[in-house]
Amino acid sequence: MEILNTSGRRKTSVARVYMTSGQGNITINDRDIKVYFPNEVLQTIVNQPFATLEAVGKYDVKVNVKGGGISGQAEAIRLAITKALIEENAEVRPALKKEGFITRDPRMVERKKFGKRKARRSFQFSKR
Image 1 (cartoon, rainbow, N blue to C red):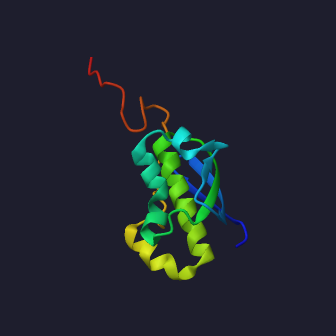
Image 2: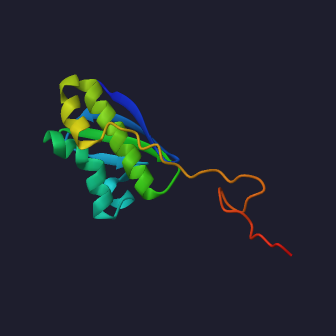
């Protein structure tokens, strides 16, 4: 299997994933997944596509991720891994789609508008 190169995004996080067949090593920004994501929940989010396809330990994953917070980064990595698995074998798409891993979550922080205190919140109105 050649190197599969895909990207995933969530909020302001961008993850680039390079996937090859291997022993299941996941490296994020040159650190092990257990070091980068000490939280067990975030490790589970990253491994969900492999767990769905019962392919845990079959691929080595190298990830470059930047921007956003740790949960956004974890979900961006999940989307990129899902895209790579579909690129390798198109028949796994229905199983991953059923779990909702293919859909990019479009929710982002709304920008602040001029004349407002926040994105939508106005300054306090004073009649006098």
